[in-house]
Image (cartoon, rainbow, N blue to C red; front, side, top):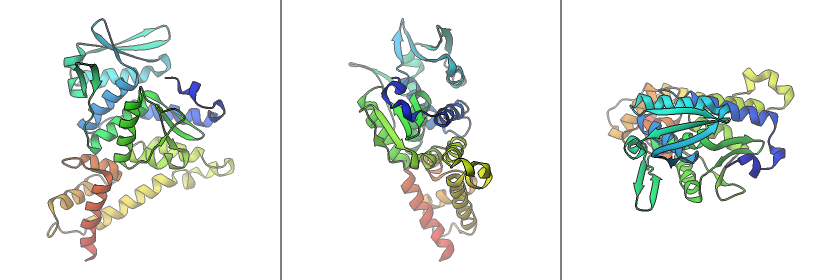
Length: 294
């Protein structure tokens, strides 16, 4: 789906295109910050939202030649898991081909049923973060009105909206049933919730009036700074909490906050065992930290 053909041309500005490029570059460099569950769903959603289909026994997906880094990222992730994939450049397109997909991609949610192939999605915060990242990686643009994700069908759009809500992001329906929209005023925080801090900072900076951009070190990362300050306060209080009197879940929340002092609540929720929603994790942590003041 070409989002540029479906969205008003006037909403595509120089700044918004730079934000989109920054988002895709950050996703092309996703590394050890992803849990195994998030990584599997990231890959699965990326393939699904690129319209992966069977061609001659191979599952193939395409991206524009300008997105060669994305194709290479996907090939590298699959190779690290022992799944061979080829990247071919044809007529301005990068084609990713994966042999024997039913076996090779089962761990990523690829299933073949009586009605054809589909992608299974787990219901956990870690899976939701990965699924959202994969959708953004595959089919997203940032315009002056916010983030837009083009879904392969209405069922995928429903799944994506549910995944975003599980992470703590409230999406809107776009101009079409298959477009999911995050408004511009909520975009910076949504990106932080998905662990995409560099893009969040850049989006915030570009939303500033021109005369304030020179003060970027002070103003540009306002949302990011608020998140970091809140995390720092949590860590300071968590260091004073005794495990005595805490439930196992509360103790785990405190330990995760101390182990990952810069992580967002959504990222910490994804690291819980088992993963939980952002709101549930925040509640556990809040009740645990209350012991320090008791």
